[in-house]
Length: 167
Image (cartoon, rainbow, N blue to C red; front, side, top):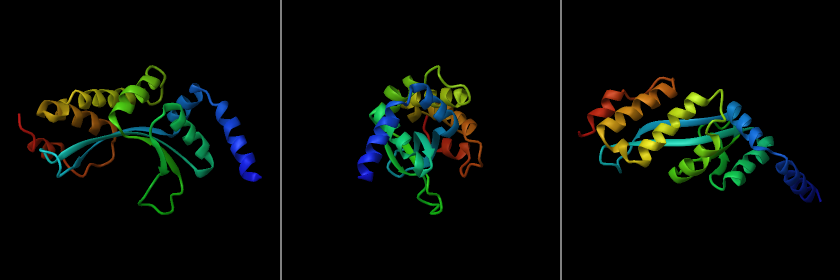
């Protein structure tokens, strides 16, 4: 009986979530991420990675599931595979078409706190969609954007990555 009640309660809760609520939730708990990682499968040896993520404690799983339902893409997972003490969950969208066609249009002109990060994220998604990141000029722009977004110490210098790109 409790499963029946919790399912009905969750459906009722989710029907009251507005788009404004989702935007506010992302302002506090969301992230637009761009990174460059080694990849033996690519010609240059580097790959641009990008994702949209919203994290929440397990008690907020219903909100994360609502994000997934609202956007019809992405998945809910454990937030960290490395830190076993982290019990939080995350809603994640990684695929380019969903980011370009669903996530970006939804947040366009709605963010305040994360507006600059969102604009940078949007620009990198445009570059990747146009395959500009495969050129030295394009990856240079991606690197400048990525390194300005995520300010923690980088393991690899931009110059090292650029060495592997042909003109």
